[in-house]
Length: 308
Ligand code: APR
Image (cartoon, rainbow, N blue to C red; front, top):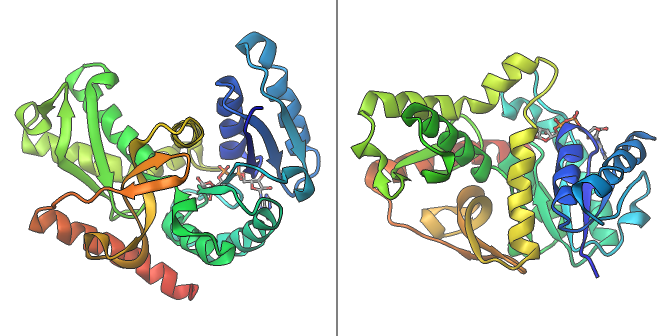
């Protein structure tokens, strides 16, 4: 039997996630939203791509959480995206009010699922979902690092005019302005990035990565990115459902790792059928550790505001 994945939120990110999962025939997909008709319409449209995409995934849309029952995995994208001039942090209170009831409903109907959170501000929303769900920490995971790393990889590949497939890069920290793109762990076909690009070029790419989401918001005006975010979610879902034991940067609840206590922060983790199966700790330089602590501090400020 195919696995069941629920996507909460039938907006830009949610609908794109559903499409990517169905295209790859990774699971049967249920899309749920508070808006009537939108999840039903988008689900039917996605389903009708099946014959062409050679996918038998069943895709349904609903406004009733009963239809999400016994999902193996639930992706929460419900909430407001940012508009030009807003930071992800500006969404804090509005999206906390969305995450609370949605997590409650999800957990009631799928008590054994793995939760992937996408709603921003990402790290704080993960923390809210962890508290609301009462789930163990390995079953509440945030999508951010894969997206931020993909942006970093894209810009490196563009600069060097090489295949994106050659580029490995890592971004740690919170999903915000203080994220930490790690140049030392970035390589092109195994060659350290620092051998191929000068420091000023690397710094320019790092800054563009940090501003990657805002650059798109500025163009779109009415919302934020969704194609690359949905691709990142798809990679996480695939790693979990296929038990790939893949090492990917994700937001994870840290309890002492990297010297951070009781906070969601982006770190390399191993994803498999149980969710986060291991947090990979690498030794950071003093500067990298300082940048990570600063980023964790920014997450803590948000978490303190909503007292979770
Ligand atoms: N329950 C279910 N769905 C909800 C709820 C709720 N309580 N509240 C809002 N939604 C739905 C909206 O009806 C809308 O269809 O969430 C959807 C959000 O879609 P968009 O406005 O298109 O936003 P999107 O671009 O998908 O971003 C969603 O993901 O990347 C993050 O920052 C982004 O927080 C934002 C989230």
